[in-house]
Image 1 (cartoon, chains in turn yellow, cyan):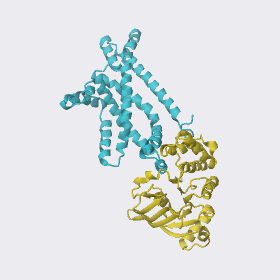
Image 2 (cartoon, chains in turn green, blue):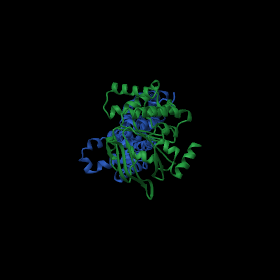
Image 3 (cartoon, rainbow over the protein chains, first blue to last red):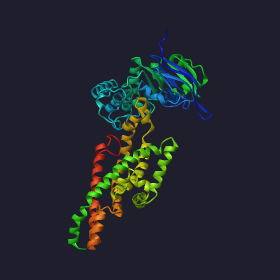
Image 4 (tube, each protein chain N blue to C red):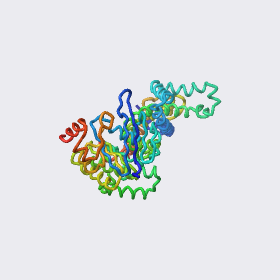
Length: 247
Length: 231
């Protein structure tokens, strides 16, 4: 039997009045699978990943993530308790806490770890994202790339079963994109289940097991990276890939 | 202007300093304690919660504090239900009424201010906290409020000075704080210029003290790397 699904989205729908931003999407992600979501702006990819993270309510459909069934109103998001790691476009680090304190906060409050234990885990993860030497710096003292690496480490501190990335490199200066993608590649090679919303097609080629193309709130096409990039089926996909490649 | 009267007035007005401090600090603390739930209530989703909070802020800020003090001290005391209630021990005392009036007034201003500060904290902060598994209460106390209070800190120093100045209204309901002490002395000496100048100078001294205190707190809690508060 195939490995159980880490994420299962069934007939997801979200509308603002008459506008359907997510139109009947079903998506399953197996344990350890890496899925890249791409598509033009307004295609619903960010909304989809935010729905899975429990940050966005939906009109109908089922969402199961990391063994938790998310209620329609997302009120039971507390049950996730860090099992679903989320990395944001704008990092969203806590500016009043140092990098180390950003990492220690949730393990201490949510998992009840002792100070020494939380600290040891935080330092280990900062090491893993190559930023241990900045542990006592505050977010405002770090570059965008450094902040995003700290944000990834902060999510990892909760030992998530699934990691969601919402355009993690879109807000970065070009020279900092590489250091963040590198950390994400490491994470992928360690077997983390990941959904990544990104326009970094190089990353998709290298890391993804599957690329999912969204347009108008629907999944238009999904395939392995090689098939997706070499032989896109839909005209919209081809047009999108042309635009991105020449950007 | 008589130098002797001026010097003689200092210790007498100084005697009221203690009560001025008591009113100022108690009212400030009361204001802070009430302001936070008030700010949260004003932004509550339920109208049954937000409407009374907003009405409170509107009415308190829209009428003179002296009138509010008279309502509390003379007005409430004329009601039998109030005289029979457990609040009577506080409400029958002019000092308690003064602290209540000034404190509840400060709460309305601070509530409006805090509400703005809380809404200034970006949504992404709460989202990050939620995905990390923090409860709404933990998110509020560990993420939102530490940032919101840093926004309002410069205004807090100003607020305690306003509360201190408002504490002089207590003299209108027989409390002998600095202004009350000064008025009593003027009645005896007929030297309003000297005596009130002494009172004003002492208030100014207190205000400088509060300002220094809050500047120190601001320096101590400044977030490194954020623009505007680098030392």
